[in-house]
Length: 82
Image 1 (tube, rainbow, N blue to C red):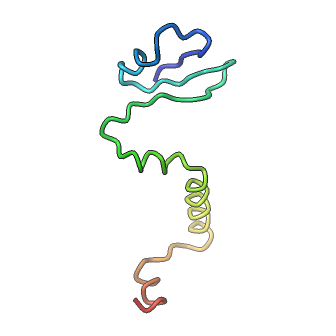
Image 2: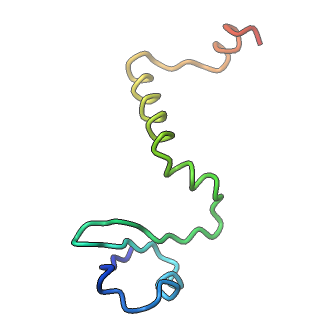
Image 3: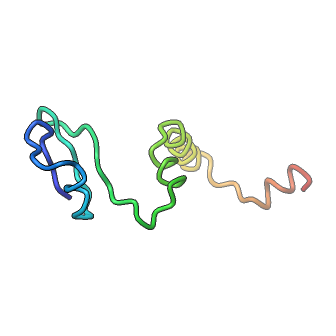
């Protein structure tokens, strides 16, 4: 992974991307964005993985599992009669 201070970037972004490694863009010492190679990655999966609402749902689900245990799909089907 490479870090590039936005104000010090010398090459066009297309040149940075050609290295095919993740690049973290830094502004005032803080990461603000990333350029990632996505060749071979499903775009829908990528978008969902960055969706804050989806991430919140997953975190709540994991917390619920810790507190209440797992619910298996067979149990859900039986409860719903399907």
